[in-house]
Length: 139
Image 1 (tube, helix red, strand yellow):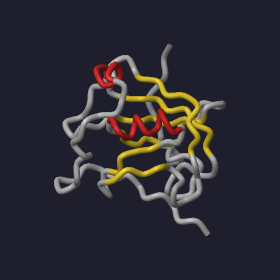
Image 2 (tube, one colour; image 1 turned 180 degrees about the horizontal axis):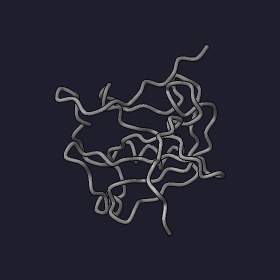
Image 3 (cartoon, one colour; image 1 turned 120 degrees about the horizontal axis):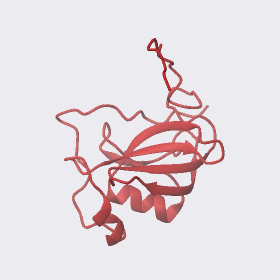
Image 4 (cartoon, one colour; image 1 turned 135 degrees about the vertical axis):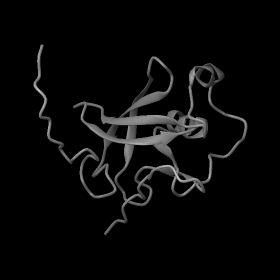
């Protein structure tokens, strides 16, 4: 049985920051990124053919560089303080089809071919808990 990928958890004061080193990422992309104070951008991950939102993770310049050059989704684990390639421990790989930068440069949309579950809980998507919406919808 495969071991699930480690979850990426919330901010902790003692969490390691991404390594501070020269970026191998294309300088034109580097210039467009707007990072959090700890050097990260949000990565929204979706299934390439259905548009299903699978998960949200974090990338620094190096993780984005690795994702773009290897075709394998690579993230910065804030909880472990290291890079992780989705599926390296679980076998639930993400093969990258495209990556798009949002208009503000503070998030990327990673379209993948997801093999197996995207969520560390074993669910297909991390967004499996529906919340009640009680407000009236008007058009």
